[in-house]
Amino acid sequence: MNLKQRQAIINAQKDAFNRHGYHPNSLLWSSTEIQEIRFKILSGIGITAGDSVLDVGCGFGDFAAFLDKNSKPVDFIGLDLSEELIKEGRKRYPKTKLLTGDLFDYDPAEKSVDYVTLSGALNRKLDYLAKDDSANSSKNYALNVIKKMYHTCRKGIAFNLLDARHEWTASRWDLQSFDPDEIADFIKHDLKPTGKYHIIDGYLENDFTVYVVNPDVS
Image 1: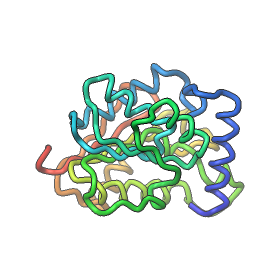
Image 2: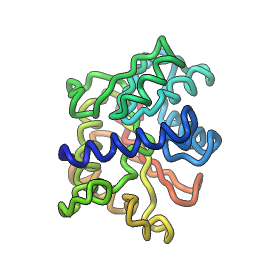
Image 3: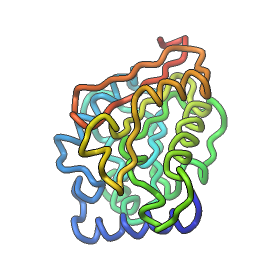
């Protein structure tokens, strides 16, 4: 992600927060119910009480609250580019560690947390936001984020992406979608995981979730 793209995301997020405040619409989710469907799927990778979780693009840090509510309190770190979202999240969840920046700013050490999660943070087309014609910049950034997530985890990663098989999603000029087969090939040939990976779909019509789980928890 270049500086122009980064600032475009920050500006778009600030505008959404100014319009909607503390609401899923500020995160480009239509409702709390839809947001929590994704959270439920993400947590299904095997997160249990006491694990450490790094959430990339955490928004307000609501995933930490979801885990607490479902008897899975964790050592949670959330990262988001939006200072507005992080400030609001700190007010609502003062015991949760929330930091401004992206995964590459934070630059966690290899195998430094149990699970790394991501929900919706790779759905924007960076080149559209920044009026930048860099070839495949959104896709390349997304794949680099996934790779960094995998190197950071001890137990596994869970992330969701928009499904390019869905006609409306694939037609959107401002949204980045992926074919699950493309992501499966990336996992096999680029991540070369030592454990198993799973692709889960069917919970929402335009979304799929990926687990990559290391051998000791597979």
